[in-house]
Structure formats: structure tokens, C-alpha cells
Image (cartoon, rainbow, N blue to C red; front, side, top):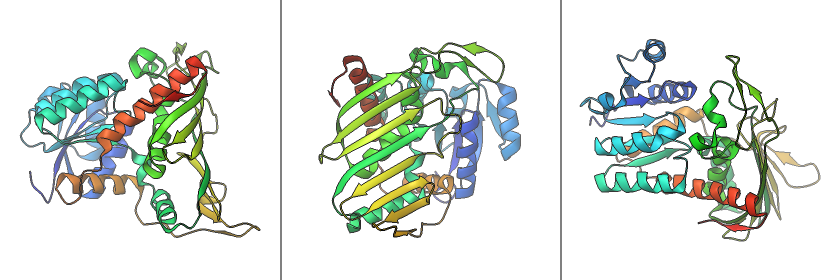
Length: 338
């Protein structure tokens, strides 16, 4: 492995691959190979980003000696199979969220990587927004005082380019697993362990038309409303929607404390801090866009310049919270997180 210019293979040529390939190249890595089950799709992406080699068999990419590490950005139902094969090939990996469809699948992935001695990272891009880093600094400094409540929102109109998003057997759930998992990890990342959940879910759009004209009937939720209790005693409300026409700009977070309030990605901007009486300020944010920041950090971890971020354990924990949401919705009761 060349510590100066790492050679990365990307598994998956869907829309999220744009984010990863662009971020890797901006961060100084060389993307040397790309996999997609559809050769034409792979070649379009390869031509767009100047990638030399494409594969329609991910195992052939994993067998390459000139691939130092891989990003797995394939559909959720393929994660366990491909991650286990990647571990067997001895390749460090960044596995796109959600880590897998169930906690059991996550644990099998972790076991395979630990047995092979291969580093596993799970990609939670929302951690790398500058406003999150700035919020964490405020919390460490005690600027907001003792926290009293948090509100989180993740919402989009829903994926309209593939039918598998709307099959519970293929994705393990619905909106919670697709976009809510971002909010779950972000809340854990900033505020600590979630120990119990009270939630309800619903299918509010019983039939959807995809961009290619196909009509799908979802069997998984497009709405979830959850209350989380953290180990600290803090409570958070989390709204997740896969049917919001205007959508939310990545996420919306409101943090309330005895001495101040912080709003992230709201009508007041990326980060605004209020102290009462209409007194709001906008703290400076660290430089760099989210893709550059995330991939710089991952490459630094691969080179041994930064410690492992624990995102493998976080990937499992976020899925366990999602599973608690589903149990709670079914039982109409508070549920502990495994």
C-alpha cells in the first residue's frame, strides 16, 4: 500500500458513487477500478471520472493487487455478501450506510472482518458537515448549558429510481433504514448512547410511480416518529419521512439547553445559536465540503495517521436502534435498544 497515494476500488455505480468518487479524487486518492452489475453503467461513470478499469464481477475487482482498499456502495441486500468477500480478500473497506439489513447481518460482517484482521469502516457522511463539528465544540465548551431536548428531522420525497427501496425483505425496513439511519447515527455521535425508543410508523403513500413508469406498492414505512432516551437521560424527538415533496436539506437539528439554543440547517442558516431576546449568532464553520472531509479522514485512517473511528460498532448500533423503532411501533411501547 502506497502511503502517499492510495489506490481505491469502488463497488457500485449508482448515484452515491458520484459522492464517493468525487470525494476520493478531491482528497488525493486514485480510483483505479469500478464495479457495476451493468457494464454500460460502469463505463459511463468510469469515463466521467477517468477510471481505467471496470468490472461486472466484484470478485475480480477484489482480486486485483493494485487495489489497496474499497468502498462498498451497492444495494443494501448485497452488503453482507460483498463485505464478507472483501474481508476474505484482505481489503480494508468503507461500507455505505446502512451497514446491513439487520443486526444479525451486521454482526456477521464484523466477525468476518475481525477474523481476517481487515479494517471495517461504515460511511456516515452527516458526521462530516462543518456545522456538526462546530456544534460539538459548543457542547464541549458548555455554551448551551445543560441540554434539555433535541429535535432531529430527516426527510426526502423518497427514492424514485429503483423498486428495491420499497421492499422490506431487501432493505430491512423503510424510511428509517434509508434516511433515518443518518439521523440515528448523528444523534448517537453527538449526544451518546440511545438506550430506549418509543415510536410509531406508517405507510402514507400506498402506491408510487418510479421515473421509469413502473408502479410499486411499498410494504415498508415511509413515516416514522420516534422518541429516544439517551444514557444521560436526555430525550430527543426524531421525525423521518420518505414522502416530503420539498424535502429537508440533508437534516434539520434543534438543540435546546438551559443557556442557549442551536439550530442546524434551518431557515436561520447552517448553524445559528440563540441566547434569548432575539439574540442569534452564526459561529464560523470549519472549511471543506462534506465529501472532501469524509474521504480525507478515511484515507488518513487507512494510512495510520488517525485512529479508527469506531464506525463499525456504530453501524451495528444504528441498526439496533432502527430495530427497536420497529419493535416499539409494533408493540406500542417503549423498547430497549439491544
